[in-house]
Image (cartoon, rainbow, N blue to C red; front, side, top):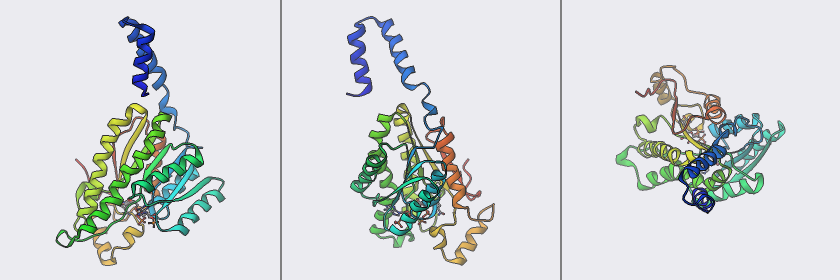
Length: 289
Ligand SMILES: NC(=O)c1ccc[n+]([C@@H]2O[C@H](COP(=O)([O-])OP(=O)(O)OC[C@H]3O[C@@H](n4cnc5c(N)ncnc54)[C@H](OP(=O)(O)O)[C@@H]3O)[C@@H](O)[C@H]2O)c1
């Protein structure tokens, strides 16, 4: 039975038609249930953190950031088994707890398996970082349906799948932090990235709606929009194009994965009153009004 249905039922039984008593009781129930909840994740030590696409790049650095804070980290990967195992090994060698879970999060069943294995091993899921992402760049006139579908499935559908799988646990716990790694491209658009821009913009709409729906359960949902960050994704861009890109960034450099990871940690650790937000960390390459 849902909480509100259960509450209404028990109040009806207990108080019948006495409206004043009913209102007072409702208020007490509300306060006892929601008061103090903001402190739940003030301490990261022991929190269970799932990072999708944590074998390399930003995901790896985010996993390390949470590991160094004492969290139990679930290192997800799709194909890069050895790098993912190396991330977990490093975390364990420095005294932390980590497991590796292979799952292609663009597949609903595998995303569910990721959350199931997390809960089997650690008993809960406190933090979900939707980081897994790919690009498959083509100008629109050359973009094949497969290019579109693949990017939208990995970058956008995966967020719905993992959040949907994690929700029952977070709702039961009455707390949770979800951070979706979008991109400034979802805000600004970019040549050759219609699929990626659409997926990343979709994440922002998803973030706001999920934030609206889940606030009542003590779950916050936020998005981070990095600019160009020095990972495999950016290193794959031809050097001459990289040089041109650098000229478009007011701070004249690519960001470091650590700079994003620290922001993700901030949102989780200190973002008690932050939900539905989009944070830009992009060296000034895109400035919102
Ligand atoms: N780097 C940037 O400049 C930049 C800027 C803005 C936003 N972002 C976003 O930040 C996120 C990380 O980017 P990155 O630069 O770190 O990329 P990256 O170095 O290419 O790493 C991508 C990660 O995602 C994983 N992955 C890919 N497809 C997956 C799937 N279907 N299921 C599970 N894992 C999957 C990869 O694991 P496998 O190797 O095992 O597939 C890898 O660990 C992405 O969402 C990206 O769009 C990056």
